[in-house]
Amino acid sequence: MKKSAFLFIIAAGLLFAGCKQGSESSEKVDLSGAGATFPQPYYTIVFKNYTEKTGNNVNYGGIGSGGGIRSLKDKTVDFGASDAYLSDNELKDMGADVVHIPTCMGAVVLSYNLKDVKELKLTGQLIADIYLGKITKWNDSRIKAINPDVNLPNKTITPVYRSDGSGTTFVFTDYLTKADSTWAVAMGREKSLKWPVGIAAKGNPGVAGAVAQTDGAIGYVGSEYALAMNTPSALLQNKAGSFVGADTESISAAADADLPSDMRTMITDSPEAKAYPISCFTWIIVYKDQAYNNRSKAQAEATVGLLNYITDPDGQNVAAKVHYAPLPEKASVNTKIIIKSITYNGEPILK
Image (cartoon, rainbow, N blue to C red):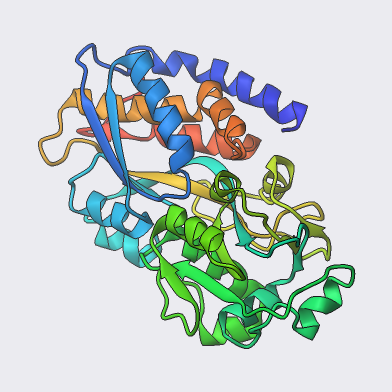
């Protein structure tokens, strides 16, 4: 992370420290959330840290972004987590105003299982054609053309995709829709698709595991899962023409742009020269007014306290340690403003 961004996070934490005073009740509560598996390794740690700090327990179920939003809409959880922001139509379906809280940035990588292939370059067009079933062998001439020094085997490609409604799928297909006009017409961007070829697996852990166990497989997963399964990931050609891997710097570079105040935005296929092309925010989504479904004020305060902690320097430092990128400067400012807008019976929870 750049020094200026790190200093800004510290400054932001000091700036908003006063807001946290009185925001949490002495009554200890249990919070529940459900949704995206993409940020789950990060959430596992940061939620545990929050519990140790406050005594408020946080239970989280990684059931996929679609499941998390349904659970929030049904009001069976305190928050939903998603790698895809809600569309205008989806917002209307929630029954009341919700807000999007970006918690960190991450990357969707193309993890592959090819013995002795340590470095592989791919483009958006090649990836699209692999998942459309137009490229079926690893030694296809188009793949060889951009990997002239790699001994690619005459082996069948097995694409792996998500079986569940998934924000990761939405991010992946959003990128392919921008990178390949054929994909945009034939498939588009969705949380769930009818895939023409390949095998299905549930959640990021399932896709990562299927790739690791299947010779010749390729799958789209959160970068943390590829690292955990020790499977290599392809270098992807970005919009500027450079082949880059996913790391903190290249992910952060993708967000070096104007951001909307509500933070509902996709940053895939960024024009920035150093950007990794399948970078994204991941969000926790909550109802803007927390006085619903007989929720207590203590629950509301604990929910806002959790959001504040995640987006404070302590929480953002955890993200950096587990291979996610902390929020960049403008995102951090916008996010804190959104958190301050959350109310209980119309009254701001953060004073």
